[in-house]
Length: 337
Ligand code: UT7
Image (cartoon, rainbow, N blue to C red):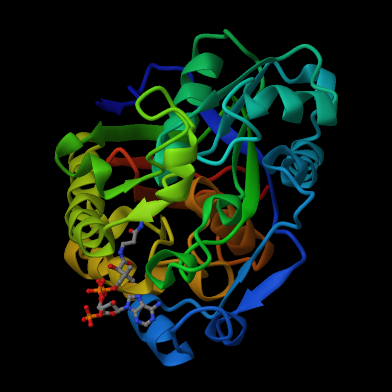
């Protein structure tokens, strides 16, 4: 799917942003004590130095509330004014009901529709498009779009090929009609040819939980890192390029690039091949690891807080994730919030 927001279309923008990461930090040195790995290997292959990890008693929705409240406060929106809560996550509280209903309850969004959206690490971009559409057609005046993960709960902590990569975190944005700026377009897609390269194989209808699925360790995240990496390097570039063409923008007109933080090498490759100046990229993979659908949001939040992203700038976001899926969005950032 590719769509450009036409000049006569309603303008919808991000008016508030918040992020939260659990307090517990797991460094590369901690992981060296758990699996056969090294700080050098992790830093060289991924750029990651530490990741945040939820406590055993923290479920996914528990880490959403601080991020959601900050986003609402930033936008000056009361919880009762929110009419849509979309949660993008691949690590929900439970298979159902949706984590969004727990989040809505926790923050007091009692007048909102609330549902989850699953598109792996691309969930944030997909959820933004849902929030955009709902606000544009006035299905909702204000939407809260949350990306949150506790992938640590799905990790096989004996598998060095995955457990060093991921981290937990949450990010939230408020979407509303705006006078200027706002979203310019979206490009979203999927490709099943590598569909089982990144998945949690059991626990759903294909392989319901059983003693055998537990014995075979099928309830943990599994990834063919090399295959996903090859796909990601291609898709991050082609998605961004297609969206720029659709929105009739040159790469020089992009002020800020916020890529999904899977791995520093994938990001560097995308920056080079899309043709972006390296200083336009906002990257914090070293502190958080891959926080999946929360990753772009946490990075946006840091860039705003650090003053390296501000009103009027054209921001390009791109992600790749389980599905396999990809997605890009272009937005003109709002009035300093
Ligand atoms: O968010 C979207 C989803 N995720 C991604 O986009 C991640 C995509 N993939 C990647 O980022 C990279 O493929 C990895 C970082 C996961 C791996 O890097 P790589 O350069 O593709 O390494 P590799 O999988 O080719 O493995 C190279 C070697 C292997 O040993 P042999 O077979 O060459 O002897 C692995 O067993 O590195 C070994 N290895 C490790 N060694 C130390 C794998 N994991 C580790 C580890 N520590 N943690």
